[in-house]
Image (cartoon, rainbow, N blue to C red; front, side, top):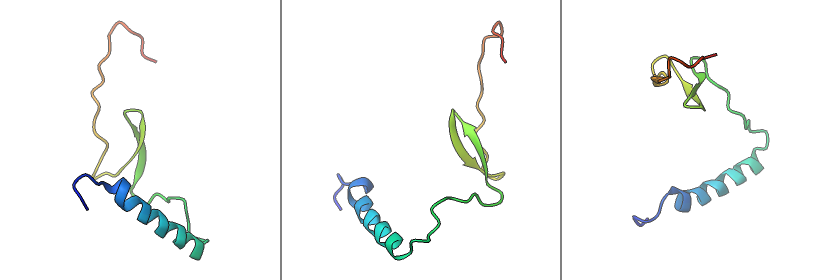
Length: 71
């Protein structure tokens, strides 16, 4: 692999072919992600994110104008 190549160009096509053949061979494969116990879902900077008690979401310091009403 040359230094100019990345995963999208080199690995992704191979993985896509592998996954396509795998699903043809095992069509009952679960395709939805089940959240394990101890993993929680929250929002960080407007995006959905997963976290644990050992790896919590980063704290966001909110700045606001005190004269504005916050609902």
